[in-house]
Amino acid sequence: LGELATWFHREHGLRPELTVVQMRGWRRAMLWEDTGVPWVAPSPNMPTPDTARVYPGGCLIEGTNLSEGRGTTRPFEWVGAPYLDAHAYADALTRERLPGVAFRPARFTPTFHKWAGRLCGGVQIHVTDRATFKPFLTGVAVIAAARRLAPRRFAWKRPPYEFERRRRPIDILLGTDRIRRALERGRPLRELERGWTADLVRWRRRRERVLAYR
Image (cartoon, rainbow, N blue to C red; front, top):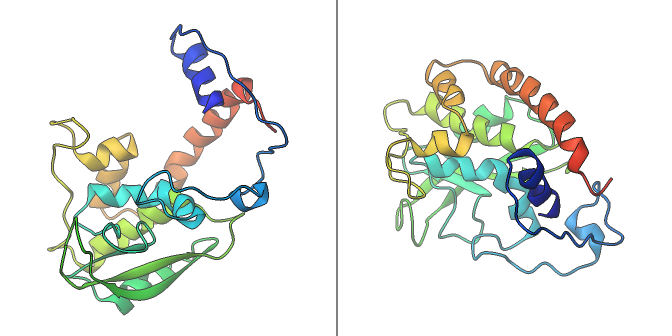
């Protein structure tokens, strides 16, 4: 958060009275489990470090009519809907050969939020290699597979979302409408990934000047 605050301070012209108190002993390559600090859930829907690992991609599910597992014991790790076949969904995602992740067929019934009280067919997202896992790519893949398997039943969530009443929620979550439009055209997943890789490289170069930890 200190690095992010510094970024906004320097790159976006904000002029708060900013003081960043740096941590001691933390390195960028560390996982939460490496810190020796107990996990305290920052939200009822963020119960474990595993939830936090999948969340950067799992949150994209909020922009669809898929359940992202809210109302279950595994939010953002379980994804599905009543109109999906769990085994077909898991098979489709497994064929993508995504790094650091495995998909297990799962059936779950949310107690609240989307599809509350309805049995959903879906998958559980298992992170098998924390070093190579790509949560954002995985989230896009989960959406793309659901669209392919159930094109008539899958739908984008409609506004409002987070106090925004005009833009589609998925476009807000993705930061652009380009990825949604590419998904609607049925573009291959790897083509989509190449489309944002160049932006990611540029971002990593720009952020170097505000990094406090190595």
